[in-house]
Image: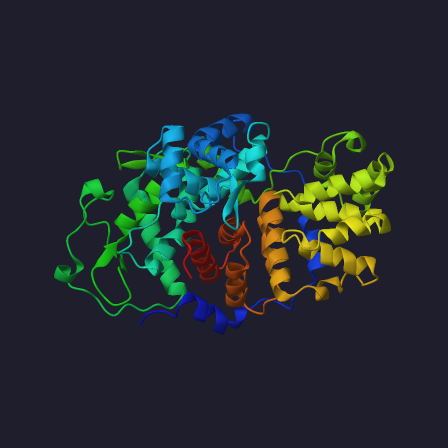
Amino acid sequence: MTSRKPDEQLARNSRLRLVRPRSLATARRAVTTRRTRPAPRPPEGTPAPSELARQARVVLADAVRIARWAAVERDPSTAQLTDRTQERAAVALELTPLQVRAGWDRARLAGLVELHGDTARPGWRLRAWDRDDMAVLRGWVALFDAWSLVHPAPDDIAPTAVAEVVEAVPQVLSLLQLSAGPVLVPVLLDLLQQRVAELREERCEVPYGPQSDAESGPEPDAESGAASGTDSAAVPADSGGGADVPVSLLLAWALQGLSAVGALTLDQGRSATLTPLGNWAVWVKLEQICVAAQSPAGNIEQSAEDMLRGCARLTPGPARVEYRAWLAARTVSGAVTELLAVARGEDALLRGLAFEALRVVGAPAEPEVRAAVDEPSLRPYVLLWLAEYEGADPEDAADVLTREEATWLWVDTAAAVADHGEPQLLLRHLDSAVQGTVPALLDAVRAGGHPRTVQVLVALAAAHPDPALAKAVRRAAFQVHTGGS
């Protein structure tokens, strides 16, 4: 029998229901929570971050060119990349239309561009691209997490089969990382088959029955990536029957997708080797560390943006001391204007921190903050600020938000966590959603229209340990990315 659809399974499985929602004020504070133990050192031989960033810039070179072109053009049709816009970009950048489309998709997934209605705007990573190696690496990791969107599976393969392989790929990557060198494709195939079988066993999926040799179809040859006779497992091609898809073909698709984002190299289909970027990314995920920019010195003399970045690693108490010192060196009106300008940017972490600094300003900031209430990206923050200013308890201030506004804030905070936090924080943030179940949350997030929705869902799927939940989240990310429902 086949298993239930992921959304139905999630809704019926009590283990996957969200816990009682916490206040969004608590969720915001989780963004700046950092562990204090020293970060582990990368494996010996790992290139320096500057060299890794250089390699990431090479992988995303076309995406950056297209994102910068779109930032200058600001054509209303750019967001949808119409045929006319695609042709104009191809001529201007001396690329083929297909290269333009591929680069545009990569730019979106890497956070280089963000869609606001019918207009594409440069993401904060694009502005930091030439000067901030960590921003570059985080952009590449976002692309790495979305490899299955960069290189979609063939249309005739059922989403369930694709999801099984995507869930099993981390084990393949772990083997490649531990091997520290080329690994033969038959070895990877054997591991993938074992992991797929384990996933099915965990879900109690029982096959219809044994197939005869004639029904199972011809064995793949050596050029397909596996030795004859090694591909004993297969996955259904569709839910209504039909030919099974050999796992070797899905492994080949996965390896090609990971190669397309620069995570590994293939030796004529015989073996695979992680690139330095891929090796570093797998190590980062295995260690679950956060690579964050160091706080700059002299926060008082910095601009609002640099001051907030410097305070990002501080706990709330010391951060408020820094805010007060920074404010004391400026006129109130100038400081408030500068903080709101930062809040209007694309970095969600700085947006939240800007409003924390505005809380320190207090009453003098009220007119300018209230005037921003109709700006969609600021409205939830403004409403919370005003509620606390008017005397509401910070733990209860979130009651002033509609469900749509709370969902927008949840995604914005998740974007901050994904950009600057650790996987554990992203999972912890899941518990702060106002929706009662994961399917309800995904429906609300899909309908919310936040420009970082795809990146947030991909990061959440990559971080979550539950395969069924991760599969549903990945499917939602794919639907948002492709404009489906």
